[in-house]
Amino acid sequence: MHVIHFAAECYPVAKVGGLADVLGALPKYQHMAGVRASVVIPYYDKPFVQQHEWLSVHTGSIQQGSITYPYTVLKEQADTLGFEFYLIHIEKLLDRPEVYGYADESEQFLAYQHAALDWLCARQIRPDIVHCHDHHAGLIPFYIEYAAQFSFLKGVPTVGTVHNAQYQGWMHWHMAAWMPSFDTWRWGLLDWDGMINPLAALIKCCWAYTAVSEGYLAELYVQANGLESLFSAERAKSYGIVNGIDTLVWNTATDPMLTYHFQASSVTKGKLANKKELSAAYGLNSQLPLLVFIGRFALEKGADLLPQTIQRVLTQYAGQINFFVLGSGDPGIEKSLQMLSKDFSQHLGLFLGYNEKLAHQIYAAADYLLMPSRVEPCGLNQLYAMRYGTIPVVHATGGLKDTVKDVDEGGYGLLFQEASVDVLIEAIERIFVIHQKTAAFKTALRKKMMALDFSWEKSAEKYNAVYKKLID
Ligand code: ADP
Image (cartoon, rainbow, N blue to C red):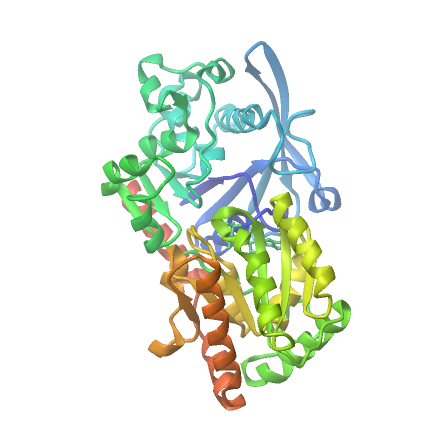
């Protein structure tokens, strides 16, 4: 079986969040399970791209509006990722350093999808399954069925995975002129509330759609940024498949980004060594419990709650806890945290920006990880944290609810029921209670988490089962 994945991100080539982690791992595990999995993403001017060898496997051109774009398909020569990996390169459009955030983002993703299908048709590559992730690849199932120039692919089963329904790729209808010509009788499949909505088109046109956890799938029916009724109407073809973690990358015994490696048997000692290193680098006292946040400063992540929570806790419980925050996003949140890190320089470590190595070091060093997310489709941070012996303190929502079990119910984490400052502070007060417990209790908790199985094998099998069903 040959599946081709289409997405905007893929770890370690281009990562903004969890989407990249999934695209870097799922195909690898599918490959190990005997499925030929390829990944096609847009070209980005990133270190990985600059440092690897690329083979030009196809050149062609596409017409968008009045513009003709020559494109090149590049294949990573050594297959270092564990699967076939391709980039779609278009000069001055798909050759930039960042994944998102450009004013002509719609043109970028339209061109990516158009060129990718043009290549497959030109080279007569007809996979058994086309798997599209989020709105950036959302138009592909529509094109395959209703754009005559891709008729070679017509009838190939398509799967759509929803990693985050908050972003849908909305475009004004005048952008239809940028698309390959399609059967205009079918325009309704592209439309949602008077806009072209690539995520809606994906859900309408794919043969099956999946959400990245059971809990998130259930949430989509009631809270999906305007698409609730669509997700419900298409429920019969839906599946909830929780993300896994790539245990080849996230392994405390071998992680090249850590100075001090450890295993479950040496978790207490190993974490302390990592904590001492991080604390020394940021002028924090390593004797105190360390509570960390890693992620985008966005409302959906509850990052707006951080400044006030940190300020109140560090004032009320002075000298009892340290925080570390790694992330970037909303400038107001960044500024507030920056000011706090000056006021409480011995108790708040802060790194504004994206830093993969530091993230690994923090998971290894931290005692507790805070996730006050309002929306969390799956959430990978809590899985990485647990794998690294760090107790997750999470809002009971989406994938967090599915993967974290409260200590009071025989589990290993702390769940809270509301994303608000007061409730967050109550959760942090529970940390103090846990922290007072014996070293043996805490070590047992950490060992229990490290032994949990969130590996990709099981989830990759579930995707493969969906594919088989569609092919049959
Ligand atoms: P998202 O909604 O952002 O995709 P996930 O929990 O699914 O959230 O995945 C987040 C991923 O991005 C994790 O691998 C996390 O470690 C990583 N990450 C987020 N922010 C940063 C950052 N500032 N620096 C390094 N890694 C980060």
